[in-house]
Image (cartoon, rainbow, N blue to C red; front, side, top):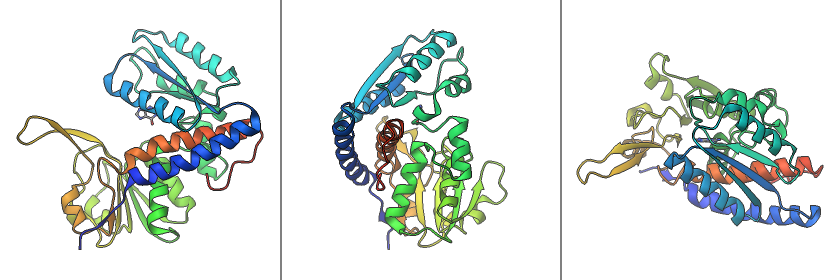
Length: 296
Ligand code: GUN
């Protein structure tokens, strides 16, 4: 039997409706809307699309969006000055500096300069550390979205064998920490892992976040496993010359074996922006000294 499809669009839409209600409550109790500032340096078309869709989603949820567009030759010192200004701005609860940044700017320095309380990407070492020790953190949006989908699909993850392929600070490592927090048994696999297919075949939960098109094959998957595909890879199409998006998992093969699987597109992707809105609301509540709603 073919795997169930995990509908990230529907899950994200449901979450965004809930967040809009929370955003209204926040506005009613504080007299101001929660605010997200986005910073885009340069004119990379894909980054532009991402940042604009983040701004649009922010406004649709009843929050304020502040967008800053800087020229591609912006000096690091000028970007750091903008971050400092946003750190001090009382209207701004979340700061997102879109990556990648141009070569003359050290991204680590910029992330380091963001107030951890406003770091809605969850990239600051303070938030990574808080996540690692199980304290209140702002958690990177993509793994948070994956966890949401997994809990909706499976309920309790306690004792499950989880394999995360990829060890990035943005997805792999925080994903592993979140799964550990749910009492799963977690393996982090990566490019140097020996016999990756055999490791993957142990997984009740398989999260692929490597950025290599269709790397995970059907025979790497344990029958009935839940597969979360974080990959968004643009590849040349077969005949018509247009490009198409594929994940890190060979979807058609995997679908024959897995119990449930996220499609690409329409799986993890839509959850990422919803979680950015969530993190902005979490940051706004904490900054205002309000209790963060349980179901956020
Ligand atoms: N570039 C690609 N994904 C992301 C993200 O989640 N956050 C930021 N800041 N930049 C990105």
